[in-house]
Image (tube, rainbow, N blue to C red; front, side, top):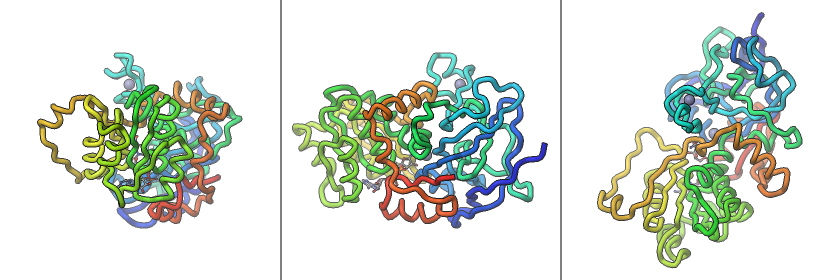
Length: 362
Ligand SMILES: NC(=O)c1ccc[n+]([C@@H]2O[C@H](COP(=O)([O-])OP(=O)(O)OC[C@H]3O[C@@H](n4cnc5c(N)ncnc54)[C@H](O)[C@@H]3O)[C@@H](O)[C@H]2O)c1
Ligand SMILES: [Zn+2]
Ligand SMILES: [Zn+2]
C-alpha cells in the first residue's frame, strides 16, 4: 500500500532553521507500528540534532517526546493493537544482546527502531530523531517503542515521559540511586534537571539543591521539590553546595547541562564516596581535565545516565500512576502548548529560558 502523506518538522542542514515539510510515512511492516501523534515535547536534544551536534545524518525528522494512539500495526505485531494509547520510547529492548541476556535490559545495546524509513516527498530518506520523529501527524516506529499507559493522563503530559522528564527522574532514582536521607544537587534545571529534582523528592532526599544561571528556572525548581536554590552566575555553586551540606558536599550531584564547567562543578560539589551523574549531553568536541589523585581520593562513582537508565515498560506506567495520584506534578513541566509550525520559535524560547517544555499539539 502507498505511504501516507503528512506534515513533519524537518532539519535539512546543520544550524539551518527547521521547516514544516510533506513527509511520507510507510504502511507498517513486520515488527512496526504507525502512531497518530497527539502531543510531542520540544527537548534540547532536538536542538542538538539541528545544530549537527549529534551526527551528520541530515535531513532529520525531529521530535521524540511523544504520546499518541496506535493507528496500524504490522502483520506479526501482537503487543499493541490499533487504538492503544501509548507513550513512544527510544529504548525498545532486543532481549538478546549481552546486556539484555545479563538481566540489564535498561542498558540494551541493540534497541529496535522501524526498519523502513520515512521519507521526504522526493523519496529522500529521513533520519528520525532518536528513532522516533514525532513532530509529525503520523510516525513509524518499532512496535516495542510503543508503551501502553493509562489514557487518563493527557497526551501533553504523558509525552514528556518519553524523554526529558524520564531521563531526569531516572538519573536521580535509577542511575544516582538517590534514597531517603540523601543530599542531592542538580546543576541545570530545565526539563531534564527538574525531572531529577522531582525524582530526588520522590525518593525521599532530605536536601535538594537546584543550581541554574536563570532565576526563573530556580523558581520552577522549587515547585518540584528543591529545598535550596543557587544562582551560579552570582555564587560559586561548589562552595554553595558545600555550605548547604555541612561543609561536605552532596551525596549525589547530577549534571543536567553537560558542559565541562558544570561537570567539574558536579565532581567537586559531591561528598567523599558520593556519586556524579552526567545526564546532560556534551558536544563531541568537549573535554575535561581532572587530577587523577582527586578521582581516586574522592572515591564514589562517576556515572552517565542514558535515558535515566529507564525500562519504559516498567517506568512509564509507574510514573503515570504517581502523576494520577498527585505524587508527581508532571503537568507543571508543560509551559506552553504550540502548533506544529512553531518548533523554531520554541527553540528560541528554550534558549532564552522562557520555558521548561513547549509541547506541540497535533
Ligand atoms: N541523557 C539523556 O538520556 C538525555 C535525555 C534528554 C535530554 N538530555 C540532555 O539533557 C540536557 C538538558 O536538556 P533540557 O531539555 O533540560 O534542556 P534545557 O535547555 O531545558 O535546560 C538546560 C538548563 O541548564 C541551564 N544551564 C545552562 N548553562 C548552565 C550553567 N553553566 N550552570 C547551570 N545551569 C546552566 C539553563 O539555564 C537551563 O535551565 C541537554 O544536554 C539534553 O540534550 C539527555
Ligand atoms: Zn538488548
Ligand atoms: Zn529528548
